[in-house]
Amino acid sequence: MVVCDKKVKQRDLENINTISETLDEFNLLDLNGQGNRKYTAQLVKPSEGLVMPVKKKRKFPDTDDHELRKCKITSLARPQIRGARPISSEKPFSSKKCLAWFHECAGPDDEIGPEAMEKFCEDIGVEPENIIMLVLAWHLEAANMGFFTKEEWLRGMTVLQCDCTERLQSKLDYLRGELNDSAAFKNIYRYAFDFSRDKDQRSLDMDTAKCMLALLLGRTWPLFPVFHQFLEQSKYKGMNKDQWYNVLEFSRTIKPDLSNYDEDGAWPVLLDEFVEWQKAQSAS
Image (cartoon, rainbow, N blue to C red):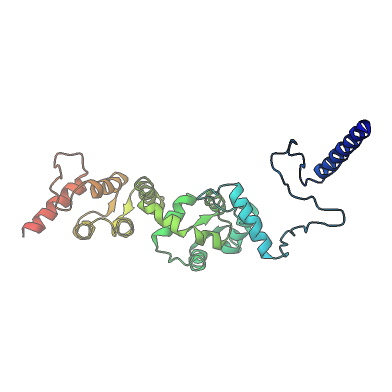
């Protein structure tokens, strides 16, 4: 009997252990309370045939929303650079196109003369007497007033990167702005002397000198009106290069009341006489 009881108990323990192991396999409960599990109960594994629902990914339609999503991802992955300029779609400068533009303006002639120049000015929307035309001539290194040769045209327009009317029109503000640059203006002013004088004369005739001074200094030099009056009544029939250069220096350094004018300075006689004349006019 004792042996039978021991066998029964041993069989019962084996059955209990088998059941416990089976439950462990299903992650239910460690009936002995002694397993390796920390908790007495766990989540039940889904049985075969039961499938957990899969969360569907959101679909983006093939529209701008998809592109917007891509842009957002890009902006997060790569910081934006402030001030970055978009790549220009403008076509590069073409020498061939520039030459064709010249022949279009010049017509059958080998240079753009006075009549063609008027038409050219009309095309770009600038009056012939506008100072911008002087700045443009300076860029082209034109030798004679009222004329542009083919060589001058190609050289200057290449520097400006202009091969058509529209491109030159887009540069007009830039040309105008150079007048506000002290160094550039000085070069333009000096260039104007040789550009506007008769090539068989060393000096600039006084009528042309007065017109060019009005164009260059009339808007910026407070003393220009009285200087112009002085030239009108003076005995001078022309202006040489030294006088021309010094008029600009005088306009930049001498105060409108002439209080800082040095009579012993190395000014041309023309300007000494102007100062004397102006002081006499102010005293009377």
